[in-house]
Length: 503
Image (cartoon, rainbow, N blue to C red; front, side):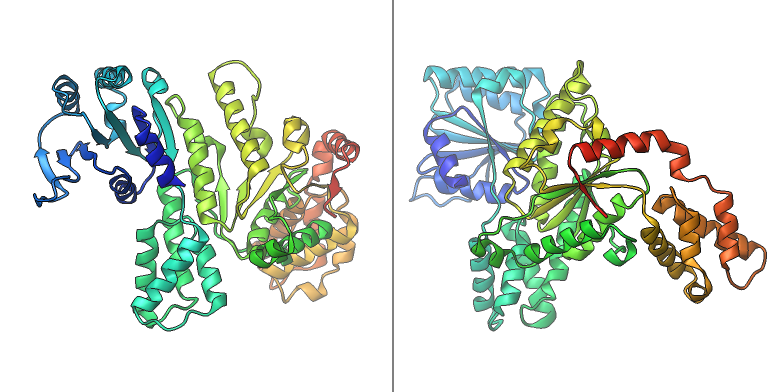
């Protein structure tokens, strides 16, 4: 589809095709393939002007022949239009961020576009850049083209071809299917490199290749600077209570762990879940534990990192974040404190307008998403969220998390004592502790256990007792004491909106 669109735009003489891509080599190969008999020139900051191919069959030249190694972009544009040197050519322009901020260069590009529009020049400019920065003066002359990721069929063919050419033996179907899914979002070069690394280590293609794939995807996230890959330690066993939510997530894990069979059966891929409720009651813990349950990476989206100083940069960062998440898929995308992320929607001023546009992008993606990116959004105050976000079709389900009941508090005590003082747990009356902590959040209970253990250590004790923890409870104010009125209002709101209880 990418090549087809590229050819159509070139044949239609669109003045400027702006290709949003990191992989210059792949894009250049596509351009050379679809340009027919047109000459292809390239200008870049380092080399100057380069001839990318020659149409005279009797004349053998390098596709990298340097035409002018010191010409500036402005000199190139002036002479090209004036002398009609651009006629019947495709001009690749690289290092776009270096010159699209320059008013003179933008004016010269606009002048060239006017000549194309009048029919004086039969020319197409192709800008290749991972950053989209479109000056207002050039908007009407530009079309933006996104390079598409390799399809599952293309990746499968690459793996089988590699195995055949390197005599790597048969690749088991189960391993092949896992590798195909894991390779999604990587370029041809990255896939070939990982296959070579995996083959050189074992002499065959096995599940060990998954380690290399995950390392490459971690690199993608680190280099983007927009998303964060969160280490996963927590599991569903670390969550006390919330059994309804946990059971719902387990059902989704069955689908995500066998997506091809689920699709064949007619099951749609899960979109995600919104978990709302009072602070300190396990919402973030659920995001981490769900990634562990699904066996996928956990990516965290910080809306603050999306905000850029240039016009359109924030929206481009959102597109990039979504593209990276889809490239890493299957994965869990965690958006913490969602109500703060989209604060100011519909307001006046530049910041509010940018946030509104970002919100629109996010909603559209959630509605139309077909990738295996499972979104876990958490929110403390559902009343601050825009109603559009809670419409059917955005999230698969909305759960609310309330303060833990007595059974859940007992379980939370057992988890936190068991993690820190497992030998003392059997002698501690967790049922009594649960009775004493009505109105305490999970975070409150964890704090109580930590305080009791610290106090026992400072006093030189060899173990902790029920009395130690009771003392810590007596000096701790519960969340219900601190936020009683707010919690009551939130719980009433959740019930009225018919949200599902996580417990």
